[in-house]
Amino acid sequence: MAKVVALVDDLFFQAKLLETARQAGVELRVVTSAGALSSEASARPALIVVDLNGRSEPLSAIEMLRAAGNPAPVIAFFSHVHNGLAQRARAAGCREVMPRSEFTRNLAAILAAVRLEGGS
View 1 (cartoon, one colour):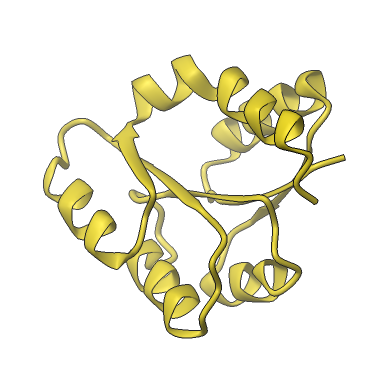
View 2 (tube, helix red, strand yellow; view 1 turned 45 degrees about the horizontal axis):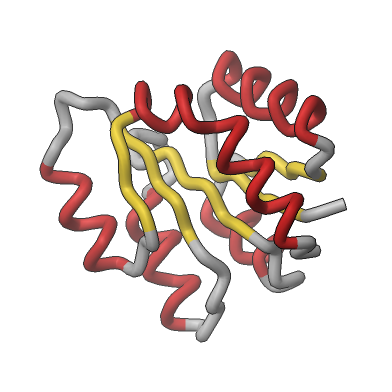
């Protein structure tokens, strides 16, 4: 199975991520802190997902990964009312940044692509 790590502290969205990953046949690990993300990311997951509106300083977590030389692709999502986060996330090293509604709409396809790439 492919490995995806998600930095998400919203319990309802965690459940959505986990169920969609299960349906896609993708192993997903949810973490709620920058330290836990760093630890999980050391295993070089195929993808990292970050909620930019989380309480765990998500931009700092992304910057910390990049400073440590972690090359894993990062897809981040944000509440549409916080458009400024998108530019800051790209500058921090995100491959893709999208509003939460778009991320949710495309989540199954994003996870299926990870599975098809065979990353683990």
